[in-house]
Image 1 (cartoon, rainbow, N blue to C red):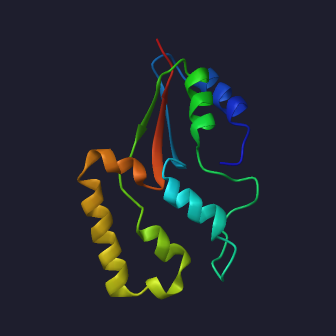
Image 2: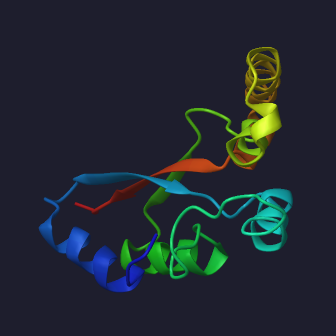
Image 3: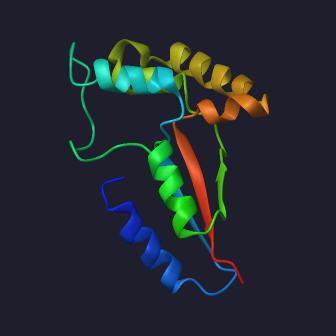
Length: 131
């Protein structure tokens, strides 16, 4: 995300009706391996950097900020695990049909184990305004 999360969260909270839910798809910073690759590989070795310098995934500080604004009523869901496929997003050699299929099936296998879903790069964040 690129924004002042506290200010944006307050505005979302303000415009929601009591019991209303704001849902957002965000990149997640929970996977340490992905974050290590993002900070040390992307933008180097011919691996393109997507996004701007002020953009960053939701990290622990961001998550805490949302919990404060929404009085703890924040839930994270992982509708899909996109983990191994992230490599193909940056490494052109992996963007071939059999490799992409293999990575997709491996991500689907990871998704079957609920504790591993948080390894995915994308999270759906649900922020609820209490009644």
